[in-house]
Amino acid sequence: MNALLQIDPARRQNGVVAFSSGNHAQGVALAARMLGIRATIVMPENSVQSKVEATRAYGAEIVQGGVTAATRDNVAREIAERTGAEVVPPFDDERIIAGAGTVGLEIVEEWPEVTAIIVPLGGGGLLSGVALAATSLNPKIEVFGVEPAAGNDGEQSFRSGRIVSIDPPQTIADGARTLAIGQRNFAIIRERVRDVVSVDDTTLLDTLKFAMYRTKLVIEPTGALGLAALLSGKVRPRGPVAVVVSGGNLDFSLLG
Image (cartoon, rainbow, N blue to C red; front, side, top):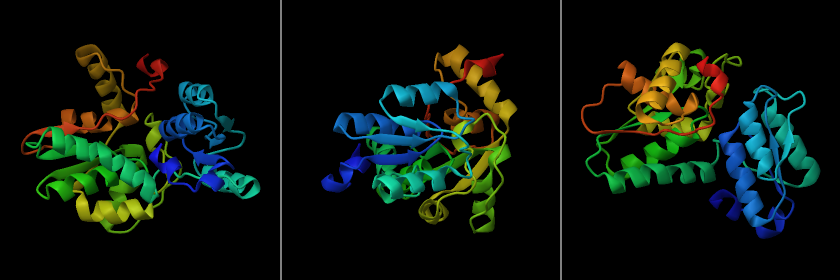
């Protein structure tokens, strides 16, 4: 909502356009409906159907024909140029980073004893926002990012010190099928994040089942990345740890 409220009111009447596989799509669609403006959401053809349906239910127009993870950005910007709509990117944007930062703010304010925060990583909006907010309040907090092993562009980028682009990854973590981390996000992650690790899809699937059977939480694969890293030992925090669980749009066919 905050990202849309920051758009000039006159321009906002032209609507907004976003590109996302699901969670950002739903957020923009809902905020647009609440503000009474048009939303067009560009989603890859292989997006999880439940996410597409939820986004459409919020009143957004969905564009999927021929859209892939590699083309969704360009398609959205072409629509914006044609219609005058404002583009609301899913991660490489100060408004999105600031919004995600409220998660880190709430964690530290509600649990001052926390020493580590583990966050899913796709394009980097959530991780960079949480890291910036949390370490600004307490520089001693260690923040970790977690990606799917098949789509570990962020991990590679973190290790090499430069943004690494990859081919469209084949992973059940559909919210982390990004091809490269955002420039604004990477600058913050390099400075504020302790480490970036990855977990394979088998571990992710086991984590989904654990969360459902033992904690009664329904989590989508991308949202379970942080929990998977903790349970598998990929991240070993030194004290009280908070895990950001982001996304509950689970495709139940994954459970077999």
